[in-house]
Amino acid sequence: MPEDVFEVPEAEFFAFMRKLWSTKKRDDLMLDLANLKRDDCNNFWHKRNWLQREPDGELEALSNDLRGVWGKLSAERVIDATLRRWLGGNSATDAPRAFVPYDQLNTIVPNPWNLRVTLAFAVINNFPKLGTCGNPKCPRPYFLRSRSGQQFCNRKPCLAYGQREQKLKWWHQHRGIGTPKGQGVRR
Figure 1 (cartoon, rainbow, N blue to C red):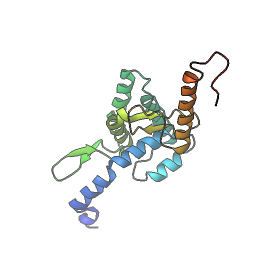
Figure 2 (figure 1 turned 180 degrees about the horizontal axis):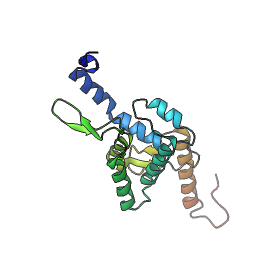
Figure 3 (figure 1 turned 30 degrees about the vertical axis):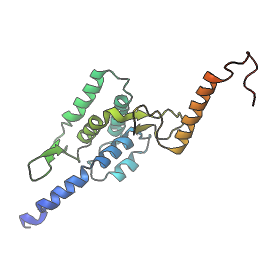
Figure 4 (figure 1 turned 90 degrees about the horizontal axis):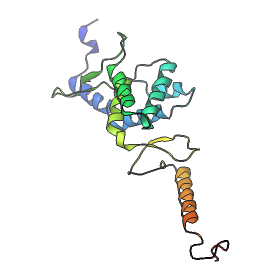
């Protein structure tokens, strides 16, 4: 078999790398892993067939680690230790390398086939935007905030829940001001 059978033209390779390493793909990967439900690993891998597949137990452990970082309740040293562990990579010989060339200018980027490195860079790039939805019934409670102080994700039921909570809070603070106790506001 000729040696050049597996060679890919350089321009095609770098175009493929840019597509794989898009910010949206990284963010979606991070959101899907944070919101991973038990026994939903096959769907995660089905959507991410370019990644090297890992055992379901390791994927669930990564998901739990990500939720710990996401909650920001962890001490800085816990977050630091988690990111170091992800960037340190897997010691297995078949693990994909951490960094790969990105373009003709010899720029290197995290390897999009390496789940832990991709995840670490997604967390680092989005850390200020990590948010947890205030709706206890939200099916995907981990989300990226589009504005600072956002307490609910952009799903319609969660926004409606947030509006109801805000109206109830306002009512408890302002109802009956200036009226004798027990009479309330008349309409």
